[in-house]
Amino acid sequence: MTPKCMHAPRERLLAVGVTAAMVGALLSRRRVAQGLLALSRLASSAAASPTAPLSGCLYRYKHPSWPAPLQAFESPAAHAHRKYCVYIGGLTDGLLACSYVEALGAALDERGWSLVQPVLSSSYAGFGCSSLQRDADELAQLLRHIADREEGDAEFALVGHSTGCQDAVTLLRTAPPELRCRVRAAVLQAPVSDRESQTVEQDSDGSRGRLLAEAEAKLAAGEGEALLSQKYYGFVPISASRFASLVGRDGPDDLFSSDFTDERLAAKLGHMGLAGQRATAPSHPGLRTLFCFSGGDEYVPPSVDVPLLARRFVAAAGGAENGASALILAGASHNLAKPPRAAGEFVAAVCRTLDEI
Image 1 (cartoon, rainbow, N blue to C red):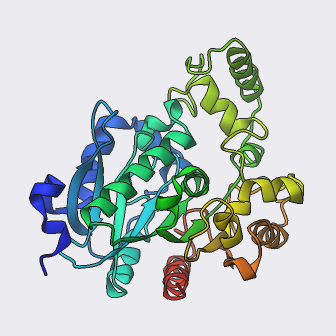
Image 2 (image 1 turned 45 degrees about the vertical axis):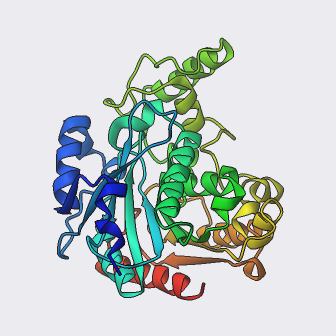
């Protein structure tokens, strides 16, 4: 069988054997200001990986209505897999979002899965003028592109990190049923509330509140796409709608807050279980969802009872009988850079989840 990533006429491959580290460096130099390096959450790729660089295929994918294509990096470069794990990073992330990505790619390959890392419109510094729905639409097009390439014979898993978790939840709520039926697993690593994480960071001058008021005023005036007067974290231009979504209550990005009622959480996460999927996609063959929390997440307020929240998320998704489960990695940081064992434990958890499909 011809390795699927070698289908050059259909894939319009830009390169074969290009390392993801090289591509990430080129893109980040073009799109991300130097201030990115100073932000711990917004630079989850900062931790160096001890594993070998990923090799793979870089290719374009495009919806007919888009003015230009997007890109995805698929590993390994030559494979005959029919199963694809799409890895979605968080704010300011792109390729190699976290230090465990290389190890995850190697473990997936051993199990017959390819790792796909998309570059979305929101990647790197683009998130300020994007949205979860746009991310979901672009991810749906990526799944469609791969499924068409494989002539309908393709299955998918989603692994989201940080805001990538919100992307996965949004995709599984809004994508067409025929695409959602192909998604057999979702692993959400560090599903953290952006709104609650704001309380961890000091706002001594009250700028956050002023910006939220400015954003809400623009939204009320029908100017949601207008840029705010101050950049997010000092270097990312951000629209009123995205800032309100990230910082305000109950917006599109506000999916994981601990102060929601059980009923509200069920409304936001109920489709992350099999029963929730079959309510709108009756032929769905099965979905497993793993909520993976970091026990030492620096963006979770101390007041949040993480074990309780984990149980509430599982219940909101329909419980174990609908394929939902949770894992807390003791002492782990937001991006699993610390402690050293955290990354390996997470990769093993992803593999167990996929093995259960």
